[in-house]
Image 1: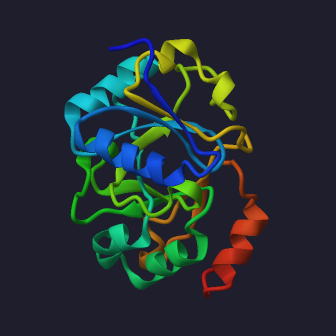
Image 2: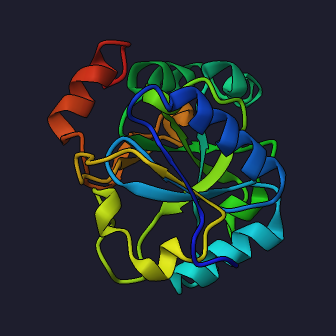
Length: 216
């Protein structure tokens, strides 16, 4: 792997170029460094075991830990949404796009490589912003070495990671806040939603958004 990946800046009208480069690199089995809404992430094809294993090697991470599947377009999520119950679908509508990872029931066992041990549950995200509109779903995880903080600026991405990716999208400085992870897998069976990791959205703001669609 080259120590000098292609770098595409989002500034100065580079969004369309970045989206096209992202889609090409993912389709070719590559690994992309990209700006999420809060921190930088690593992305690859969620159905490519070799690419996912490569991401775990780059991070030095236990490959038994689950990741999440991120979408850049609501249209790309339609088959996943069709599998959800009405309350879970309402929660997705209320919270996405946004800096939230939702753990949903996965009866179709979609993207088992992202689920890892529990294929009945899947973490999903929807990203808007400059990369919004790309049609390829991605396996995504934060672009940090295991045990280190996730970078909120392109300049803070470790050289050890930058030198291993095929494409790097420079989105400048982000918020530095990871997504809030919320488990809604049992919400259609009378279960409650639960925060698994605190992040960019507070519990109060989550409760308010969910109450707006009738979910307490």
